[in-house]
Structures are given as C-alpha cells and as structure tokens.
Image 1: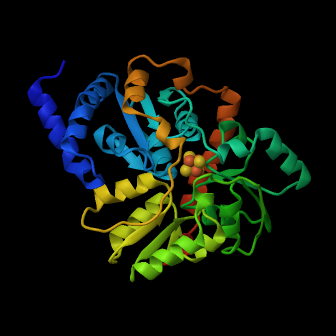
Image 2: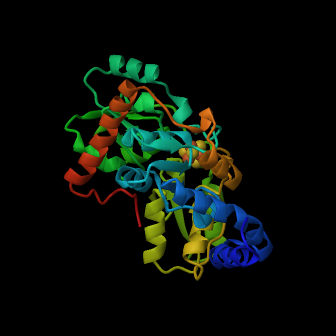
Image 3: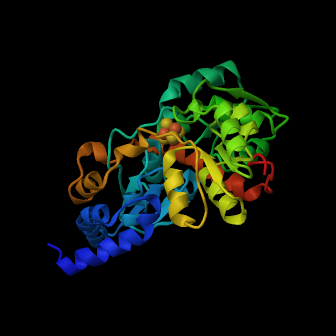
Length: 344
Ligand code: SF4
C-alpha cells in the first residue's frame, strides 16, 4: 500500500523523535506502515487524535495531533472542529471529550482503558455524600465518570485543584475521589476538605525511602512528584503538580538530573522533548493507559466497534458538562493561586 520510499521517510521521521526514548530504526520501521495508514485515514475522516502524556511514544510522536494532560486535552477537545475525536487515554478522558462535543464521534481505542480513581466512586456514592453534608459543594477531580461529574458542582484537574477549591465561598468542600490529592490540597487551604477514599494504583506505590536513596546517590537531583502521590512523597520532592506543570518545570530549570515520580510515559515524553537533559530513577506503569495500541487506533478509525464509541444519555452529558464548564469559568475568573503546584 505504501512505497518503500514512503516507509523509509516515515521511519526517519519516527526515529528523529523516538531514538531519544531508546527506539531503534528497526522498531520505527515496524511502526511506519501503521502510522502512515492512521495519519492517512485521520485526514480522510477529518479526525483529530488527542494523546495523554502517559501514552506510549509511538502514539505520542507517531500519530497524535495534541499531547498533554487532562486539562490541556479537554481544552483541545473543546476547541477542535474535527468530526471525529480519537482519545488515546482512558475512559473518563474520552467521556470528557464527548461531554464537550456531543455532536462529534468520540472514539476510545481500547474499551479496557479504565482508571482506579474513576472506578472508586459512583453517582450513588456522591448522592449519599451530599445527603450527609447538605449544602457543601462537591468538587471532583476530572478522574471520574460522566455520571459522577453530573452529580458535582465543579470539576478540577491536578493543575487547578487549589484554585477551584478557593473559588467557592464555603468553609467546607467535598473533594473527590483522590484521598492523597485531598490531603495535599488540605495543606494549602484553610477550608475543610471532606475526602473520598480513592487512590491511583500507580501513584500510591511511591515511597519516600526511594526518593531519599536517589537524592543521596545523585547530588543536585530534582525530584518532581505528581499530586496524586501521598503527602509525605510530595513533601520529600522538590516540586509537585500535574504532568504539564512538570514539563514546564523541567523546561525552565537547569539541574544535573531529574526524577519524575509518576507514570513512566512522562519519562519517555520528557526524554523526547528534552534530549539534552538527564532523567533517572523510578516510575510506575499504568496498566489502563497502556491498553491503547496503534493497531486498536487503526481499527477504531476504520470501523469502530460499539465498545470503542463513547455514548451517554443527554441528561447525564448536560449534568457533567455543567461541572466541566464551571471549572473552565472558575479557572479563568479566579486570580492565579501560586501555591499550587506545591513547591519549587
Ligand atoms: S495513572 Fe492512575 S489516575 Fe491515571 S489513569 Fe492510571 S490509574 Fe488512573
């Protein structure tokens, strides 16, 4: 279908970026026919591909039109004029794209791409919390299902959580579903946060002792932790925030080496974006994020199966949209809260 010359050119294009994450020419050559075909069908169908930073490098640099964190990608989803959105991330992210684009086709390549945080809480759980704490606003981290978002007052991301919490005049806020993010935010606000017992299976695994070992071994090492990590891990780090915050931190600082206490995909992304910088140490693999593959993306674009197409009732969509739009409104209306991310 593609000529040898086209395959060769595509191999070179992929290799320029992917060599920095350890992909050899042979691997790039293997990916080339797939990325060529996906990019061709993408144009024919007026589709856009959004990829979270935790996706594999072949997806991020082979076919994605936009790469970033949940907030960045939800803005991209809000602004696109494509007819089809392929969301390379997990289900709640693809749902967010659908909530903001009800008339577009939104595809999630792997129906198995869930999230331990999103699965920790249901709409019924939120209704019970609201009955238990009447009048207390509910702020949900975007890592929740559409039905949960529809029950809440506003969404937030790791990048704007504190700003959204502070925007409400109330003294107490129900903050769901991540207990560690709630504990991290509690240190930065005088409001009382009522937390849910959810956690990320990747970020809950990181330990302070490992950070200390690396800091001893590599003088000058800068440690960046995601705010889904436990408070003691955040405290032992030099910086805490969301994935885009970490990218900006690395871009703006000079250090002999960096350690990213988050999902391994961000290490690959940093190595590709900042090949002159040194990244080392620990990271964790999210089994949900790694469900998407080039093969599934091609399948979804060509002939999507029902499980790959995101659908929801209009009532649920409108409720969830209200929570998301409130986040966009508050994150623009409220002056920047510089304490979030945590410290530099
Ligand atoms: S890294 Fe954690 S929060 Fe992100 S999708 Fe995976 S399980 Fe969910």
